[in-house]
Image (cartoon, rainbow, N blue to C red; front, top):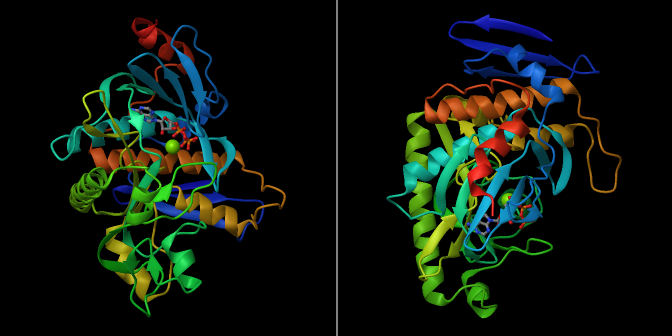
Length: 349
Ligand SMILES: Nc1ncnc2c1ncn2[C@@H]1O[C@H](COP(=O)(O)OP(=O)(O)OP(=O)(O)O)[C@@H](O)[C@H]1O
Ligand SMILES: [Mg+2]
């Protein structure tokens, strides 16, 4: 691997088995890639805390459920295309801290579930009755999964979850105004529209009006803040739920690279002109990389090398720093699990 420093940013080059196949991007990360290396073998894959509540293992987070609150522990697990691939060093911390930052920045737009953030990897939240719908807001025509706007548009779909899409749009082009394209949250995610949501009693009509109104407002705030940091918040997914008083709160995670796409704003136009993919600081980078390695459902899984894991870690940390404007603080030791246990001890049942 070659690391060369150009100007005020570092340019990372990572070589793979095939020397012609390398990834690079301009990183503003304040820490050196090499200082992440010790964490490659100390990633947080699973947790097994006693007396924290009933455990649910999500794709990325371990959730400990108590009577009125839940403890969300962001692990380092990396999923894509609904497959769990590997762990990415320090990803859980970057994810949890970025989400906490965004909840703080958006709390005047919509109340949220956060009670406390007692550890870099953990958030204590109000346990809500969650709506069984993923509220996806899209500013651009993009994506690579079966429910994404671009994949469906390319197949000819012009009515997308109740939104009429114009003819002749290009991949990664901006929509005139952001659109909401919900999916059901079940075994498989299925596209749905407002009428279907009410029909299937996933929310009431009045609730959906509030949910969609707030989702667009959250997205607007997200885009404004991202723009100030030289980034485009391309799209995102919100999850919402109801508290005991019947208030609708935004839950789960907000504007993280797992739930959102981010592109570098300065290079977007130029790369569009040249027919290139935008520079992305999110999971899409990994999805495209997997596709580039020949990934498809039913085919053998490509091997994720440590260099790719490091590169992904750098992406997550870089995004955290760009968005928050704060330096990412490396853990003092590699024994992260012990630190989490100590920080959560007062939340034991
Ligand atoms: N405040 C909350 N109250 C109850 N559940 C919550 C709350 N916030 C988030 N959750 C749920 O916690 C889980 C977070 O874990 P993670 O994101 O790893 O799971 P996932 O694999 O995306 O979830 P799922 O399997 O439900 O699709 C999600 O199921 C999410 O809906
Ligand atoms: Mg999730």
